[in-house]
Length: 276
Ligand code: FES
Image (cartoon, rainbow, N blue to C red; front, side, top):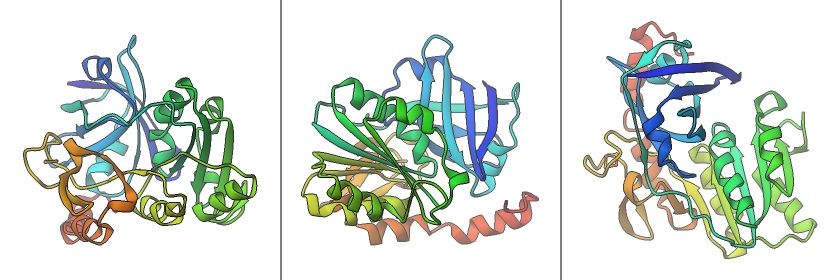
């Protein structure tokens, strides 16, 4: 069993979960994920590690409360225990001295991109980090991200903080100030990953996104995380979850992600969770 150390809502609908998982964090690398199962009636959910401490054995995750299983996670309190935290899973993010790297984080991705930003900076890259959200109250970890970023660009769609716009605004700014990136990395929802892949394709450099597919085992056994990249079938859990977004079949990915929406709506309605 895995003990919950902390669970707090850091911004509306996004929760920070700190769980004691000493064996899991020993081998954890930036970009890897864990499968969390909070107990009977809940699904197994893949969640990217946002931070970890090998000495204490604490693993930090940022997750969005979006359905019945994440509702259950959002109800956990310090001292509670959950039966499953499996990992580290997936291939680590590529960390090399690429030159100048733009790291974009939106939603839960502002948390999960933090280890990547930190590792890239430690490798000697110039790191331009972009935080993107609907409004000021949805941005978090500015202090943590700025510590390892040469420049931190904040973008809100309503203009309440930083620049007004979407991730295209960051691209306009980056071009305006004459930065030529060698790599773009985006963490966040499928829309953010898709838009980043399109908006940054003109640089003709890798635009690495973390695919959020449905997963069950996370070890290449079930096939539920299947996706198409560059015309080839891949399993996001073992071949990814990081892929060049310019080569992803986004239409197929979006259809596969929606296949359980009816069941999820039914569960939310009948579970008493209230679909928060
Ligand atoms: Fe089962 Fe990837 S989650 S094969």
